Image (cartoon, rainbow, N blue to C red; front, side):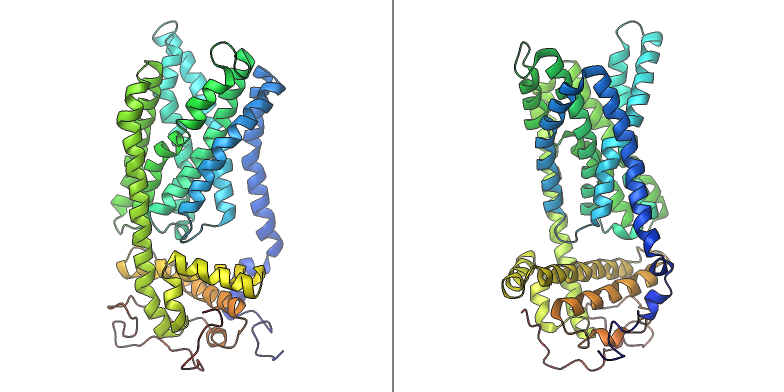
Amino acid sequence: MSSHGPLASPPPWRQHQPWARQHNKSVLLPVLGLVALAIPGLVVLSLIGANLGSDAVLVGAVAAMLPVVVVVAALLWVDRWEPEPSGLLLAAFIWGASVSVLGALMLNETAAVIGEIAVGAGAGRFVSLVISAPLAEEAFKGAFVVGLLWWRRHEFDGVVDGVVYAGLVAAGFAFTENILYFGRAFADAGLAGAGGGVLLVFVLRGLLSPFAHPLFTSMIGIAVGLAARSRSTGAQLGLPIVGYACAVVLHSLWNFSAAAGLFVAVYPLIMVPLFGALLALVVWQRRREQRIVAAQLPGFASAGWIAPSEVGLLASLAGRRGWRSAVRRQVGDRAADAVRDYQSAVTELAFLRDRMARGAVGTDAGRWHHELLSAVMAARARAVDAPNALGAAWRQPPPDWVPPQADLPSTPPGGATLPQPPGRPARYRSPYS
């Protein structure tokens, strides 16, 4: 291999990144983080087991797995345009299933005791169910989503990302909560004994309302997604609070309807229409994301970052699926995975440039742009197995990018022009097009 090849030495932008020299730490820290998140979940399971017994916990866990698989699969389906990092998605689920449950459990038990003292005998459970539970549970679930906004802001591209992260946190919470409810039903009445047992509870929680918790917490996710796209500091601070308030109100209404015997009215008249509205919002936002990517692709081709023949393939989910399928048939799974990574990198870059053009990013935008552009070049080299076609042009970090005035970023303000990668064949076509 030539000494100028892409494997001869890391590009300068990566040589100067501290995490590139600390591979062990980059692996160890996420593992330690996931372990730390799992510990509260083990504590919760041990508490449930102590109260209900190991058989009830086992039955509850098996029954709880069925609805959570459907919910998680639906959220991952929504997340197809620009898949979020798998580690963060897993962390979101574990946070909901462990930290959120343990924190809410402690606060709810305290609120129940205070309610008994302040209001009277028998009132503690109602206070905990209608007031404390919505406040505490949505606060702990929403903390993960809001934390991403402030510490991993570049992972948020809009409302869809907010719904996905919030939905996964809520799915994790519902999973552990369902273990408790299903296990308690099994301990009291068996699988289908007097009062319905596990079967009745499964119909109510697993079939009729598996998306209840994701619906509540998605209010926070929507608000955080809007805040991530806003240029206003006030909106970035205020929107998550508004989303939290909406989540608490919906959650409180849901719990009140169950406690007051109004479930048959609240469920079809309020919750089902709200869930339909959430689906409509997600579909609309996904189409908006497609339009953003499609608008950026001609500029990418003009700059030489992608081949012109790939614009159509990258502009729709159908084109992307067809591209990956063709590669999988002709070359194999590894090449298809490389094409998938390339498609994701292009999408990330398109979203970032759109946010930069609207001024909705901070001072780190230039660094993110350099990193994402280098990721596109690296992924493209793996995908087409032609590293010198375009990748060699970006051995140095690209110059600072100025938001374009038109769809084709060829004449940014100030009279400068974006660089054209040297050596790109005029009629270059992807071997997979």
